[in-house]
Length: 140
Image (tube, rainbow, N blue to C red; front, side, top):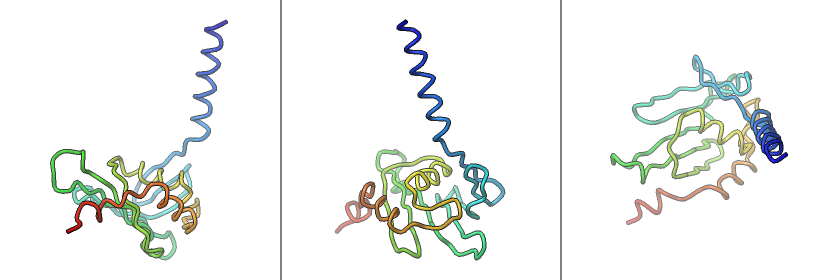
């Protein structure tokens, strides 16, 4: 009976994760979420940045920069998410794959599958996660 309950619990967790997981792909200059083309993108992994563009107008929407603070160790690395039209920058002490950055913003509903930015959700994400790293680190 105990083994059966553990099996049911694990099955439930796996099913929940599969149904709530978004499949994000960066492929051939486009960002796809759950097989829907959402943005165009450009990146320079060597310089540590990714830019998301509107599909129709080619307007730059979101700029993502991974900053290593010029050091070899990862303890002081952070990521900046710049929402250009909204003039909001979110700084989080994290460093990950590009698609995970996009997934983070989508899971926090900063944009929808049409590539439309939700200003209220961007502000909520800023309020929840921003660590104000630039001002804290480079203050004179």
